[in-house]
Structure formats: structure tokens, C-alpha cells
Length: 286
Image 1 (cartoon, rainbow, N blue to C red):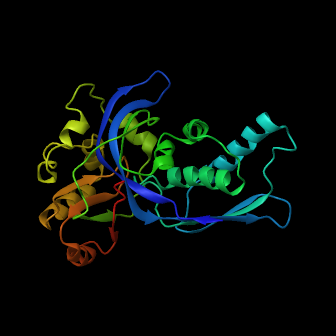
Image 2 (image 1 turned 90 degrees about the vertical axis):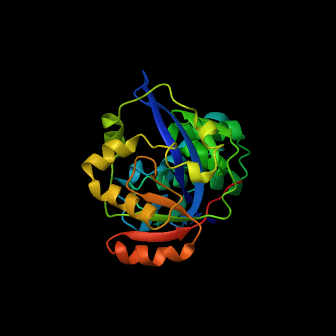
């Protein structure tokens, strides 16, 4: 079975408070985009489950990969509810081809984990409910629950509270994402950011025309990250100078995106940033 886990960008991101459990309360709107990885599994011929990766290198140990964690969580779930033998998943050979760089703020790892949950549930007809999948996804990471829905959503709490939201029609806009060769740590970014509890809710700001977003729709990580990586602020400025109606850092990573009405601007941007990955993508709005 094969799927293509996509990334996401954030339309505004508020860090509201540090929680007692070590996480932060946030408020953001997530929009799925067409940048993607490829994830496949087939029955293992040697009786052992193995994950291999190709494409963009993934830092860290594969035992921490969310695809592997998804397999282990479902395995545990089945053993608890169906017994140690009858409920076990069979050994699989898992292949993850990375196209979304780690540390870019596009949530590629979270998408991989969520897609693996959905694939296992569908392929093996496990009949895990949406509620149970949601609970398992939270165990993997804060961004994972969003990808079970994979449409524009308002995300609050530590990422586990997800609501539908009405946004302006973005079908006339293309999304250009610039990913520099910079890996940013999410945990480090959260240590540096200063939470602010009360601000205009994002759903109210997103009721404005897109042309009014740039001065109102903010990402709290920009102040921290731009101070340490001024090159990223330069990229954002260049996107705006090239006609972006709205440009922002995505999440707490290094990717900068812009909403454009003219897709041809991708070519001068590719020339302007030869050391970066510059791509033209579409958003999944519903």
C-alpha cells in the first residue's frame, strides 16, 4: 500500500502559554499543501518489520521516526484489545521516501505518522474509530491529529483541539515555498519564544480580505528565529517585494511561504535563492 503524506503551512501562529505538562498552548490555522513524501509498506519476506528511508536524509535514530512509532502504537493497541497473538500486525517492509525536509516547519514527520495510522487502519480493516485514531495520533506528536482531517482547520491547545474554520477563497492564489538549508529545532524555538495570552482571535483576522493579512496575521516565532537567522527575514522580504499578497514563516521551522496571484514569479525567485529549494504548490482548502 502506498500514500503520499503532504505537508502544511500555518496561517498565523500564536504561542499563548506554557503548560504544566511542558507543552505550550497555541492557536494557529493549518492549511495542507501539495509538497509531499511517499510512504509504502508491503509484507516482509524475512519475518521482521523494517523501515528504510530514501530521499532527503532524516536526522536521528529511525526508532524515533513517527512512521515506526505509528506501527508500534497500533501493534500495542491490537494486543491490548485483541490478545497478544490474534491482534498482532504482521511484519512489514516499510519504505519512506522523504521529500519534505526535517526542521522546515512543514510538519512532514507528523504527516508521515498520521498517514501511517490511516494506512494501517484501512489496509488491515482494523475499524479503529476516528476518536481512537485521534488519541493515538496525539501520542505521536502535537501536529499529527491535524493530518487525520487534512483540510484547513483551526488548531488550539497543544495541537489536539481541531475545528473547522471558514477562510477566504484562496483558489486564485498559488503558494510558493522557499526552504533554505537550515534545520530548526522545534523544542529550541519554543524555549526562546515569549507567550502572549490575549490577542485578536485568528478566526477574526482570517475574515479580512487576504490583502489585509500581512499587517494582522502574525507568527510568534518570527521575532525569535529572524533574530538568529536574518537570512530567513531576507527571504520573507524578497517574497513580498516580488508581489506576495501574504508571506510568513511556517510553523517554527525555516520554510518561508508566500501567496501569489502570478505563478511565474517562481522563476526569478529560484534564481534569487540558488541555495534554497523554491517550489510552487497548491493548497487543499476543503
